[in-house]
Length: 290
Ligand code: SF4
Ligand code: SF4
Ligand code: SF4
Image 1 (spheres, rainbow, N blue to C red):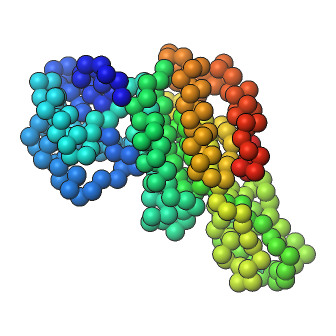
Image 2 (image 1 turned 45 degrees about the vertical axis):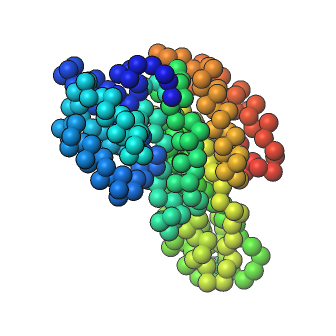
Image 3 (image 1 turned 90 degrees about the vertical axis):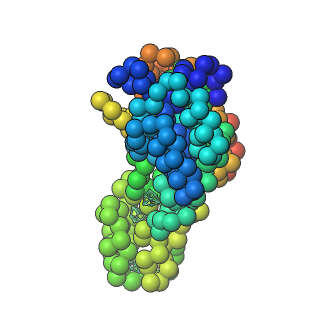
């Protein structure tokens, strides 16, 4: 994190009443222990007017007096819930519950969020950069509306065998991506979102899948003119995700300008050429689609 004066750090936000501050906390994936939650409550009671739960899975103490900032920051650090980030930097990494709790999940999104947060949180950037992770295409974290989004996907395919044309699998597909033609199923690759819901539905085990993969998007945003991030690459392992995110972060750091959001300058800073370079540098066996 930057070594600027306390009041200039990303997690400290001047309020409408300029004599007061809001203090944002760093809570990767929105996960804290009950003890930490109680600790935040005690700190809030002593130094703030209340706690605001944010859209990015963190919490903010509001109406904090500037003269109390140092004490608040120290208390938050001691509580294991340190100062967050808000300015031109990598902010809190968000994630859905993933395989820890959700039956639709394709991977452990919380573990991935904690690893990415550990590596990237607070890195100085020319723009604000957000990373969000959903462990399946239901996209509960709206990850494609972030500068960097990661989605868990799984590609179904039909193996040779006796498809009875019973139609059970078609009832599980919400995308109408499975049709029965001449008594057997036909998968529509364009319509399939790779959610995997059909895979375990077949009583005859005709539908199988590749192992889950990580679909990475770049350049999404919420706000006034929302944009869906562009597909960067889909890869097989968390190690390759880590490598790609490092390259994307370095590219944003080197190429992005401070006066525009990333999605509004993707073409100007050579997104397509950068994407091609990265894909060419990856081991081919790691790439599911590029
Ligand atoms: S995105 Fe998918 S895996 Fe994550 S919580 Fe939503 S439904 Fe579950
Ligand atoms: S993976 Fe999902 S979208 Fe694709 S065919 Fe199966 S149920 Fe339909
Ligand atoms: S793939 Fe399985 S569930 Fe789907 S129509 Fe064929 S036999 Fe029925």
